[in-house]
Length: 281
Image (cartoon, rainbow, N blue to C red):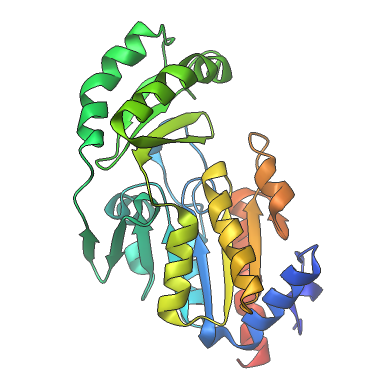
């Protein structure tokens, strides 16, 4: 039985990451682990409506939740959608923060404020904008309720389609008072003032966590990575984990630990739970 995660198949490459992981496994009841959904807990698919959790991930989260103070998911999706697609209601005590923290699901209930009026404006104008911009076949719009996203993954040249739409979408977002959130072959138009960093920090403070782990895969996760750095400066050990892909390298460059996609995350979580159990913490 390994005495530290550093003895196992995956270990942080940074000193601060190793210190945070050691703090987490030695005092798990005061630790918080938070995860992005798409690309982290679930593989990326052509149509996000078909998303499903990585095999073994719900069991791994359930086992970890029995040992850890808080397990959470922070996603750009609506909270209830992530719960339904991921089967996350099977994880005892899990908190799911949707729409980058604007929604909160826990104990079967969703709490959320009304979306700003700019969302309705975008909903009304986005279809004609996409068409008039000459977006290729395979481009489609996802209405998330509090935000809208334009996906190009199914286009013949997804990156060229995204480049074509970037400027018109930015102009629409500015007119609507929304912000643009680029991602893996998607551009999302969403409300200002919420991001995964703020959501993570608020949850850490609420739970009085003494150590934190955050895992993500995309540009929208970088504010959470920055929040981990800020928490470290305030004396809370923090570990950033990248669920790696060939599409986004910046997240891996900023992470303390890189795993091979959602499958690698399952192995990491299993190892963490085994280590905590072995330490009797």
